[in-house]
Image 1: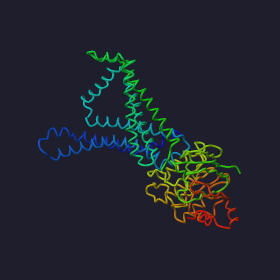
Image 2: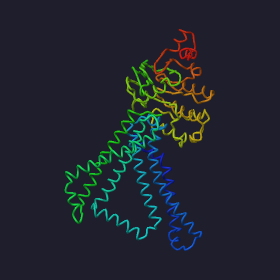
Image 3: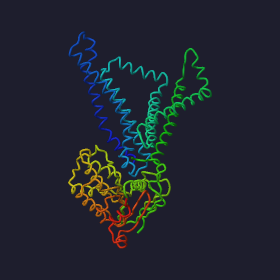
Image 4: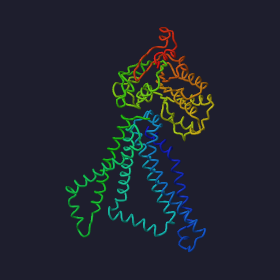
Length: 269
Length: 232
């Protein structure tokens, strides 16, 4: 049943994303051929080519920002509208457990977020013409990662990134679910709950940090006080993994809270 | 006949308001039951509890002996008051969707009814009027070979001509083993198909009788009895 939910969730969202990705890549291609930055550099007075350049650049950035915004809006809307709006009457009378709805929404949201990021990177590569400088900058980044985390970092860093991203999405879901407990102004309440959850998790992180640096990680400060601050790849990875574990804990808590509300406190309008 | 739906001392409160108040009823297989009451009498709340869309404050509902959950959702076909379909979908998409999720969905029956009501399966929901959407939804719900149909105001939004066809559809599309519970305040239209009536007022059951009993005892139609019981 989970696979069926996933299939329909991707189907319901694919159209919007695919159109967006195509238009983003198209605009970066147009920019590649028009080469507007070059035109602007060479222009000394106002002319049609300069105006056109400004237009193509602006459009490209609007579409780029648009992709990011739509990704976020879709993530919120698929949960809010499809589960807690009128469509919820169908979703919650399908013979599936409520947790499957959360998982199917989460997986879809994570996949689209990653694809949006990859498409954005691709479009920047196309726009810039993938010059040697751009390639060099990219390899500088991967070298930097390897320098801090060792070769394993190229896997550990994206994985912990996905974990943190999932935690963030689950926090949004938990906030919407909490907002659903209100009888009126549910959207406003959801924003309020998001703020509240952020504050709570920040306080908790500060507390954890305090405990960590006064006990296990007390030598961390000693290290930091040295002239040349240096973490071994092992230590850096441990730090990253500890943060990922914290994310997993928070994410699980948000998931359980959301699931409880959907199971026991559902009250569709 | 065994009970397909049974509830015991069911109560649902919202704050200090009791939407459903200590309701105990039993619905046997093979009957069409009218859940009748004025607006805001607790009809929808009751049906939502049976569908696991609300958790009762106290008491319990058993459907085929089980509490509402995945197992009962497989055998209950529910028509809510709201239009619950994604507006971007075509009718044919939604039929495939139902077929995928409900094992008891009969696709041929659905297409047959679509044809008879002269609807186009390739149309998207957003191009349809409210009444047409309600017809589509009712077709989907009645195309399932379910054991219990819970229909919340099934004829509220459609014209009288379609109303007759829909009532006809309801009667002919369920078998002896199934039961139908439908809520409405349009009593005169549905009176002729009912076997049992349950009157609900301010969350409480005020009458639970077979229609034959009503006619024998008082020699009144359900409609006039309703007007008498709920006189303002």
